[in-house]
Image 1 (cartoon, rainbow, N blue to C red):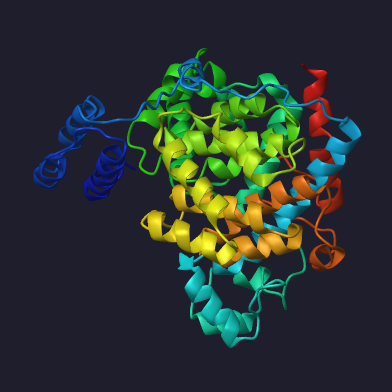
Image 2 (cartoon, helix red, strand yellow):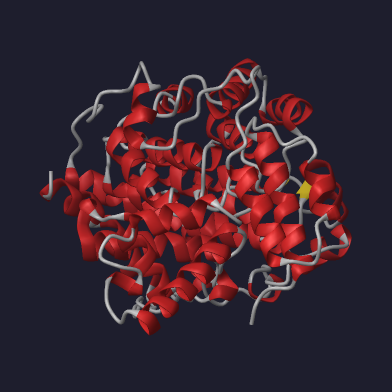
Length: 455
């Protein structure tokens, strides 16, 4: 069944907003979309014009898409490796990072409702839980007056296992990609793995858009040709590039950034390689800031195996994104604000005052709060609580914080954080047949050795 014309108008309006944010000349497009006739051809023609729109003449940023062009805009790339790692130590740290990400994700799940530190603090104080030091209670959610639909599996009184979540799905899927294809996996391998493993209901934004459209293209091609990789021909890259470049709103949101962890684990001590693998994955669904944030996060995770100082770590990771990009400018500013802050709340105020307009999933503020957490966290447990307390996409950035902190501190969260899971992990990844959290963590721990053997 074809999508409704009115739904396509809405999609196209979102694309216009995204292109405006990226500096393209889009003046007049919204009015033309509203005035367009009820016609697929008319909207398609408008989209083609939008695709061809030039950058504004006063646009100061340089934000390439291809990897060689990205590296050409990174004049101060870090060494790769930054320093040699001991693979046994890397194994332990990768396991700790994964377990930290799981705890951070579950902690943040009940309050992934576009909230702020002020609202969370008021609710936690009302229920006697501020500062946050444990999984959240139902009483706190009552005080907040809002809750994510996943709350029955993720509040303190009800946790019995690691609940299904898209953030955990993507880390597991990254592990499967590396196990099956190694570090030379292609973007087409990523697409195939998604089509074979991810249900649409556990993808969002560009991820759901691309998975739906790739499946449709594959089915159509099979019907007409009956051959080729995933049914889209022997060389799928041009088709993939076309899919992500059009009718794909939200391509600068954080949906690719949350997919960086497994690549960072595998590339312990090698931030440039981690960023390369992250670019390969992220470019399947995202563009510009959406890709650069993923490269930054993968580089930071890889660097955390060998760099102890959080601010130094983040400065290093920023060197793996284009020097004249919005991401490097804004996240670099967040980094300096955090460096000047007196404590976590001061750091949050500084970031929120400057970048609060970039809310839930919009990367700049949330990456800034992640840096804030890394600087001021006393440990893994303190850090995931600190990250979730800053609001916005609480489960996603709680997971990323836990991942980084587990590696930085070289240990998993304390036993009281893991015990409620009863060593059981649930995902919606079709190809993961293992339900033991311990055993999945052990597989994550083998990724550094797997990658090292292929270098």
